[in-house]
Length: 444
Image (tube, rainbow, N blue to C red; front, side, top):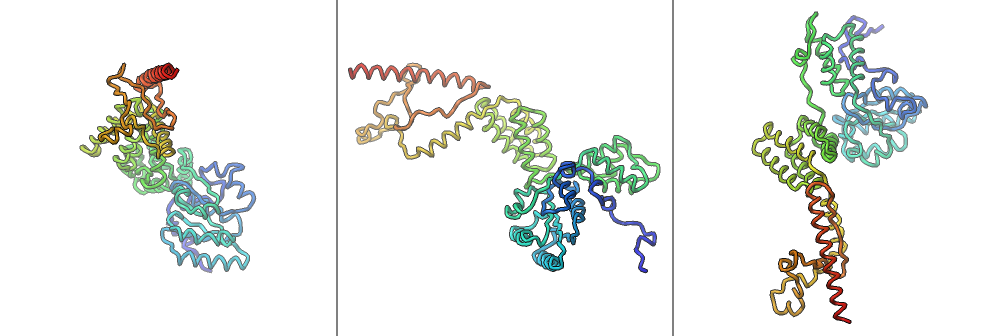
């Protein structure tokens, strides 16, 4: 009888994270939104029915574990490939094997790790075998499927969203690791909390750190927070400048600024810097915010942002980062108005609708005698000669009703602008009425 390696006393050399991988759904840590009663995945388990699914979540949240457990829901043949290493030939081989098994009455569950790495044509190759049930597809991705997967493939799959592990979930993993290793982790309580924070919601990374600590400490040694940071390397935050986290964080920064939450805005700004975002990109978005969400409520916001950007370009990081932090705080605490932004969109829409209407001849220059004969510049009122420096003429095209695109708010400098516009509106109405009255007397 052939004996396994383990029967000879050779220890299991697999990583701790793999040795602790759950073998039952009830042992999965976290993911309560999927595994709670009446949750999507729990219903699949209870109904013993599996459908093609995309597992979307951050690293180390349990995507591979769930895929392997899902393979046990029915009598599936389990195949696993990685989109990083597999190509068209590998997919053809898997599909041919799946068709052969289907003729024998057995279905194939195919787990594709990093499925977003496949290009469009490779993703399209899944369509017929998923459509006819040759395979049940389980794709794992850390990227937003809406952006990274073909719409046709996505429409044939259910998207299961996995969340990063919480602090309590990570602590549960450490307890399981200590039970499995039959020894406690040699760290002080504050260092244990720091260890969970370093993992940043990644269970696999946490267990790798624990394994590293056990291998690096001698018996009787206990690490405080400083000692821990000498043994393990601080992890850079999960951040991909070209993908979902990039857009999520800039959205969080923009909305915190709009909500006048200076502390939250500063936090998301620092998160982007810590993740390696290009400060010039942040500066460009801050400038956009100044013109879109503050506008003329604080005309200095734009200049302040551009000055901060210029200081950063002169100093670089890290000294120049402080200039951008100043800009974040200035914008967060400035009065807000999108009146200019709304006016711009309304004016543009009107211009597109009436784009062929010429300006009234009254306000056109007449450099030639012929143009004067045609009425160019006739009856133009020079505003500086008018009472209050305001003639009240109508500058819109003939045949177009007067529009009010810009409606300043009662905040910041726009409060003064609003009063000014209301004053001019009264003058315009009064002088229009006067002209109408004069014309009425002349015609009577």
